[in-house]
Image 1 (tube, rainbow, N blue to C red):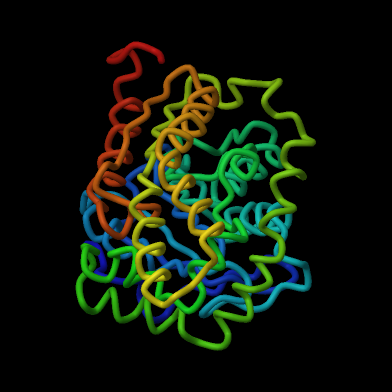
Image 2 (cartoon, helix red, strand yellow):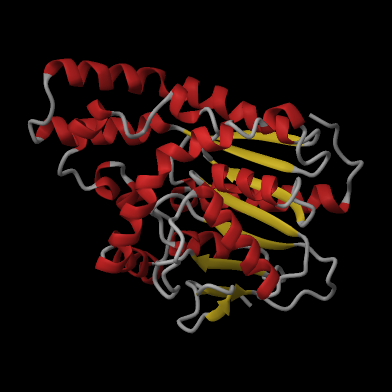
Length: 322
């Protein structure tokens, strides 16, 4: 059994300071040793953006989505939404739910930072069975290509991102899933919490880099890690076109953004390769038909990543280490 979108009545899990909303999809695992999937969203993103992926997972597989503190059905946290605090609250959620099974963590965007903080917090993630990283942020990301670049922001002023990036037209969600996502992200509650996370976004990269986790690679040993890289040029080309049509940006700013678009995909791929160092068993694939939100436009690729991790866990000698 799977759901086209998360159940309307989540389990509210008390993590000591507040409660977080946990949504359960699929049947109870037959054994506490069976891997389960846990989805972690990017910065200022609703947990509902995993709807198509959850629906397309094997029906026998248990998976979980959750609302971070302050979003949708979760209570506000007394802590600021730093990456470290979000990782701490995630660890408490797993303990208190409880979710005893090994975790295949599927993370998008900022979740790349959040998951690394979780690994640092839990001493190399003993509870982690494997990872699927969906165009995730590496700790060096902002040093290479900043999605909050001031010139890009100037061009994008007043542009509807889902429309300009082609996501509204190309997503693979059901109408019910899409309407639920858009409605959730339009609420005042959502936007207040999203701004709090946005404020913590840039500082989180330096905080993570200072931990020097790279010196301890492979952090996950031989646990399977599947990395999906997206085509940022698709997103930024759409935003550029829509912004220019509005008359946004000076010619200097437009020239800067055109250069960002020209180099975005090669630079993104180079950063995605850094994630391969997490494990001796890692795979990189590129989503050529998607911008940043692969889970919306090519959810089958995320499902393929989960299946690859499951296969590697069931047949650990079936593939050569990367």
